[in-house]
Image (cartoon, rainbow, N blue to C red):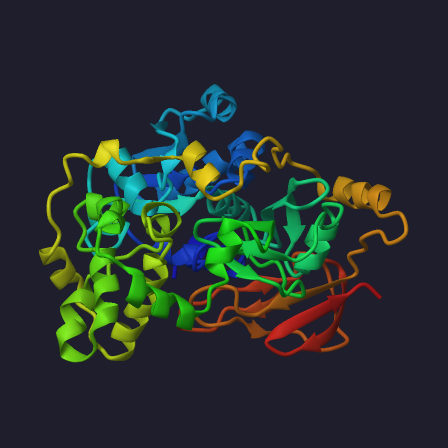
Length: 456
């Protein structure tokens, strides 16, 4: 491993969202184009706009580091046309070899495959990776963290948007390892009863009621929503219920497949066939089940397309798991053989974000933008709002596993004193793994699969 890749691995840089794919691995290739994903399609999230507006220099720096490493001559930042203030800031200092790709305000423009096609006119091979067509893709925060890693600065914080049923929505750098409860308390607390928290965005995020969970490197948003909200209602369905209802109520109208972004790009994904597969078992259902394999999980079929209010997206996810468990998945080559031409009506079937927000029952929250707030200001703000119980961050719980691959290996013991940015877990040797670091100064009080640091 060359020195830069080792430095990126030791700095703990991963994809700031999704599965958190380690960045040092993405850099280990030779491509023509480096692509930064700043489309930010998920409603209510504002983190990418904050990052591009306030840390444009770091973003450009990270892209240039990546371009030099992979041999790319061009860089592109994908951003929606509507974000005119961000575009103006980027254009003011845009390096000569980096350009902007302006995108319509539709969902899911920020999907990696959609963005690559918009920026290059090329499709990533079905079941393949962007590098196979000469492209490396990362999100905005990852490029910023890459630049910082090249300067010897470890990843100890995540940029998070907290929104929904809270007193004061915000976007801020939060220390890795603080709890969801603390992050929400920094917003002044919850403003209604009987809520759930969406981890990530309302389309692709998951729901939880466990506020002891902690912020990690892949955290992007915490949306507090009442359980009566449509997003919460759909995401809280049990697997048993969604399969039972889907089996009995799907009328095979094909709307899920007709509006599927990946299907419109010609990939072999047909959610309606996955739904049909619920009605049969055994070998006869395999062809229908295989139609789920290329699903990206964008959730448009569930949240927008299905007139019956069913959940084709989760059915596809469950079906893929079953196929994997039974060694029935198609190879990338087989998937590619099933790929067809881009649908001629694709450009007319983008779903406008404004209408999607209405369908998700989130319109009441959109007038309030989750503006950026410095962490110290957040603490002061929460103290003013919660004078009787101000938020005090005196403990963090840092998981050794925060990404796809093997967990880091602890290199500290109980009683050790550590400083913010100090490595506390090193990457597991000879495997897909990155280091983790202290996010506050303090003393190690527990070491298991989670390292606890307390200010003592």
